[in-house]
Image (tube, rainbow, N blue to C red; front, side, top):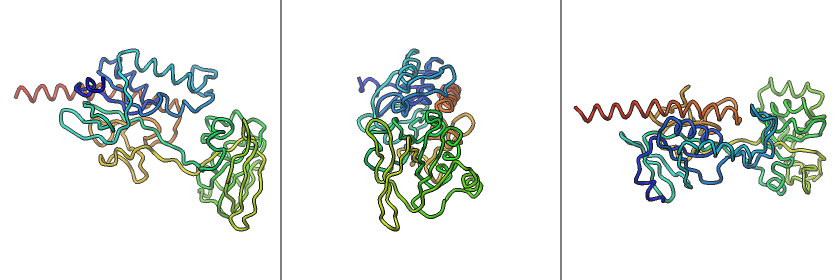
Amino acid sequence: MTKELEDKIYDVVVIGSGPGGMTAALYASRAELSTLLIERGVPGGQLINTAEVENYSGFSSVTGPDLANNMYAGATRFGAEYTFGDVREIIEGKEYKEVVTANAVFKARSVIISTGAEHKKLGVPGEGTLNGRGVSYCAVCDGAFFRNRHLVVVGGGDSAVEEGTYLTQFASKVTIIHRRDELRAQKILQNRAFNNEKVDFIWDSVVEEVVGENFVEGVQIRNTKTDEVSVVDADGAFIYIGIIPNSKAFQNLGITDEEGWIVTDETMMTSVPGIFAVGDVRKTVLRQVATAVGDGSIAGDNAYKYVESLKEELATARKV
């Protein structure tokens, strides 16, 4: 089957099947573009690890896996094909690009990158097993589940302080744990946190374990100056020590900024004609299911316009 896919020149190849990628595949295939969706894991992206989504329009509440399944059904209903693959690079070409995976090479007139981003992990016991059970990396997504609860936030940069302050609208108390004795966040964000009566701080400390059986019950911390070990009781742990875009495979194209985020224009096209980017891998101000879906619809529509223009240009060139 893979050989058959390799022999074909697709109008659109979508790399990654998170909400943005699946929406892009839906729009592209519905416009009658031949479309291939390549995914290295299970369709759905971070939705697969999201217990409940209650901020996506049209649903009062839906589990992440259920929403992912519905999106996949929509993405493939108009004929988009699906294959497993770990993309290593994209090679530019005049008539088509080559999407190189570990085991195959696919040809595409246009490419939509939807590879997402990954939150940096603490790498401590309990973090993985309690992910979605009190461990979170997204206050906007999960904050409302912790009304009147005590939360800890790990980190000291802009995201940790801003999201920690955001969580106070739900939580009874938010404790920010930072490995240094001062924050790295912007002063305006620091001042908001310092002036919020619900926020307190534990300095010079690192989390060594997330404690709990079925749900988070606290975190074990170690003071970096005294080596004293203690446990902070908490109902949830929000971790903000950085986020990494999954863009390494596209560095050769020169479409990322210095941090690795893919830069696009308002049509979702990168600086390379015919290559688009959507969702969490894109340089943007908000990373949510709704924004990824919006990106995907714009990219799918503009991929159609690009492909039609390319076909006309090639047809004219052949006549000359």
